[in-house]
Structures are given as C-alpha cells and as structure tokens.
Length: 190
Image (cartoon, rainbow, N blue to C red; front, side):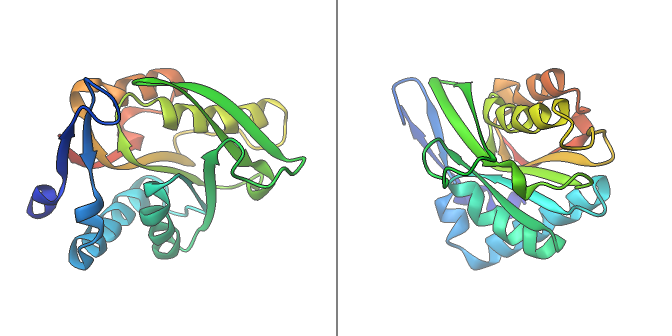
C-alpha cells in the first residue's frame, strides 16, 4: 500500500479551520490503486470474518469501496446514510453522534440486516471513530430489542481505507463497542 500513499492529498483547514482533510479521490480515480486496495481489504476482512454476509458502508466515499468489497466478499451491501436520505420505512433507524468538528446523524434500514449476519462496517477514513461507533450503536439498539443476534468478535469487524493514528479512533472505537482492536482493519495508517 506504500505505493499508493502518495495518491492521498492533504488539505489543511477543510471542512473547517484546524482540520486536516485527507482526500482519497486521486487514489480512487486510479484503477490499479482502487483494485489493489479493494482486494487487500477483502483479504484482511476474510481473516477476521471469513463468511461476511453484509457490508454496512457509510456514505459517501465509503460507498465506492464498500460496494466493491461487497462484490469481492460475496456479501450484501447496506448503505448507511445521513438522516433524510433513505426512504422513510418503519424499519428506518436514526442516531446522532459527535464528529471531530461538530455533530451529525446517520440512518439505516434495519430490515436489510438478518438475525445471523456476519457484518463488516466499512468507512473510508477512521479519524475519531465517531461515525463507525454510531453505526455500531444502530445495530446494538436492534440487538437490545431482540431483532438481531448479539455480535461477538467472530461475526463483526470494522474496516477502513485510511486511519489517522494521532486521533486515536481505533482505541476509542474498541473501548466504546467492546470489539477488540485486532478486529479493526486499516489499510493505510497516517
């Protein structure tokens, strides 16, 4: 993956002052790098969740690699979107969460998850871990309501293209969800 790190651009003060934004679009626009990262991630995921059945992917850039991962892993794709972007079914669940620079909300149609699914939660970047944690909490609420099986280290993992190590998102995510750090995959660490 070292061959492709130069394709990640750093943009200071975006989306607001004091934030360093990592732009993965040049990496995504290069067919060879997109292919390499997708298959590398799928390979790493398969060592933790050998029979993944669903990839829960967080918008918007997460949809690109998440869709490819679903195909490579032969798993279903479940979009996690910002509030108001999914159809308003009775099975739509929402959650608010903290970002590095404010708050946001996510939605998921829980009817797309089955009782015995083996789940990969994918997002393009792991910063503070808040977005992935919020997605996990959406699932956890359904577990607590008895609609899904309880997750354990054998049927869930988190996967990211890029991890911003200094923000300690991995530690936060593990602490908040109970998922061991070795079930959190990052292909590139900056």
